[in-house]
Image (cartoon, rainbow, N blue to C red; front, side, top):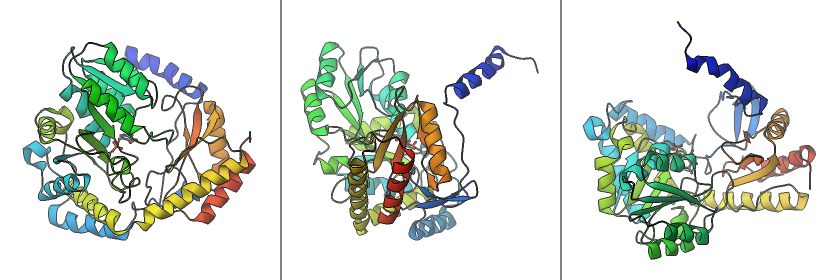
Length: 392
Ligand SMILES: Cc1ncc(COP(=O)(O)O)c(C=O)c1O
């Protein structure tokens, strides 16, 4: 085959990625997800999963998946608008609308696709404005880039900076995008203040609650329950099933008309195969367990407190976070990889997070805690970190 200009440049690109310490190795897991996993034939305590409540290998979810597969089969066959929508999708959407206190919900095949749908559907013109938190998840940033609207970013978690951006541009329709819990820093957006700014500017607010849903709020309904914010405050709520719920897929919930427009126009809803019905059934079961087992959230909070207090006492360079995401700051990408490798050999699985997932020189270990962990495992981790990390 004749070489193309693309293939000619690939070697140099890969060399650059390796040289900058940014090469990503894909570890192979040979066990189910859980507090302990088998990686490359080694048993490791897992501190890098988003399975915050320990549901990913839950017996009841496995049975729900098996039973639904017996009834509905494996594949969904087509997009939801063709023939891929089963009664499981319909039931899940009704339940999601009910528990989030929203008019309607629509299920997407993944959170990335759900976020991608938003900007172009709601702000399709050059006269529109999209404003996102500087540290918003990549899927929101990519969404904004897919729209011809003017796209601006505001200073991280700063309602004043948001207000300035919203007032600076004369655009008519305005969409504001923010995560509730920031995926790499673990901090929580000041949502009540952001809501106020959006209301004043007549902007539509979308909250991505991927890391809050299931974890925050008295009954685990996420950041909006935590802050007591309703649909009038946050017209669109997005969350995933792949993190605290332990499954796969995502949804957007909100006002009837907004959801209907997404169904009619969102390209990442229309032009992709529907989530398999058995996964919709499994997500439904997970939502029920959220209600039945508050002890998971309570235990998780105990572990978060234990880790934060222990790390502060030891002088470890962690960010102040009250969520299961506990970043340990390293700096250079290659130092973060070295530290991750050292901990791997001591029996801990914590992957290094590097640019472009985080800003330059802020590479880190993104330590994540789960209700599946024990207090003893947290203490062992703290001991190992004290041994391996340069303490302030
Ligand atoms: C904040 C945030 N939004 C969206 C997504 C995408 O969700 P999914 O993994 O379901 O595509 C993720 C997960 O990677 C995330 O962390």
